[in-house]
Length: 80
Image (cartoon, rainbow, N blue to C red; front, top):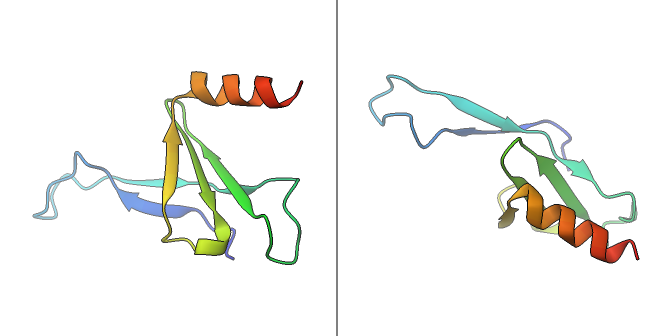
């Protein structure tokens, strides 16, 4: 699994090649994930969203995107 940022084109960019903006997500593996490939959860934070993925699915696998408030509530609930 690469620790390089994942680049993707902004939805505001046009398909003709003009006004192309690419955005990078800097993924971080959970400290609870083991190094043997099991239970690998990665998180990338942005100002207005939190992206979560299972790194066992590779870098092109599905992601869950949450608003920061929902992520904060999740973390608060599970720290109890």
